[in-house]
Amino acid sequence: MGFSESVYVQSKTPVVFNYLKEKWYKGRVKVIPIDILQLTLTPEALAWWYQDDGYLLIKGGIVKKIILSTDNFSPSENNC
Image (cartoon, rainbow, N blue to C red; front, side, top):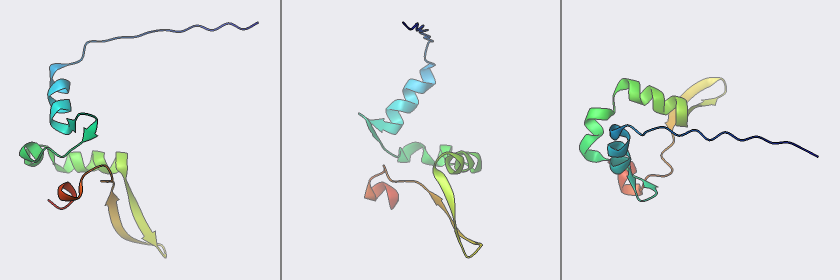
C-alpha cells in the first residue's frame, strides 16, 4: 500500500501580469504587441529571449547565426 501527499500553493497575481497577458495574448495565441515593442525590446529583453528560446547555428566550428524562436507568431508579425 502506498502513501501520497499533495500541497496546494496559491498567490495573488500582480496587476502588471494581467496587463502583460492582455498585451501578449489574444485568447490562447501569443502575439507581438507592436505598440509596446519599442519600449520592451531592449538588449536585456533580447538576452532573455535568447536564453529562453534561442540558439546558435554552428557549422564547421564557426558560429553562423543566432536564432530566436518565433514559431508561434504570425507571418505578418515575423515580418514587422
